[in-house]
Every structure is written in C-alpha cells, then in structure tokens.
Image 1 (spheres, rainbow, N blue to C red):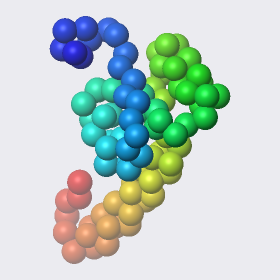
Image 2 (image 1 turned 90 degrees about the vertical axis):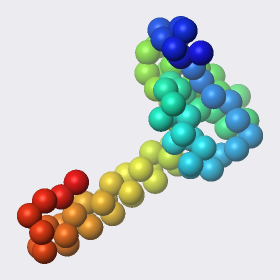
Image 3 (image 1 turned 180 degrees about the horizontal axis):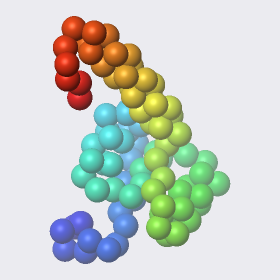
Length: 87
C-alpha cells in the first residue's frame, strides 16, 4: 500500500504489543502503531499526531530504543579500546 500511495500515512492497529512487532511496522514505513488495548484518549492523540505529519509509536518502544542506543554506545566504547572502528 505504501508503494501505491506514498503520501498517505499508515497507522497499524494491532492486538500485539511486543517491541519487535512495533519495530517491524516502523521499519516497513508505518507512521504510527496503536495497540488495541490503548484508551480512547491515546488512540485520538495518535491519530491526530499522524494527521499532523508526525509519527506516533508507543512510549514504551521509545524508552526501549533509548536503552538499546545506550547499550550500543557502551559496547562501542569498549570495542574502540581494542579496535580502530565502530558502527
């Protein structure tokens, strides 16, 4: 669908809330991901954000992404000590 209509934002609504499912939706071009268990206020905010041109993904994913980035930086620092390149 993104290939046929690239300007139309896609929001995935799913019963699955695991981080891998959310990441895959983002990787495949979704502008948002709303777990079905979300309260109506959250659903409304997510749709409004995407309609305004922003992305909206569950805050828990953003926190885990921040944690992953911190872990990567830590690994890179240790790796740099023994190598001249890092990701």
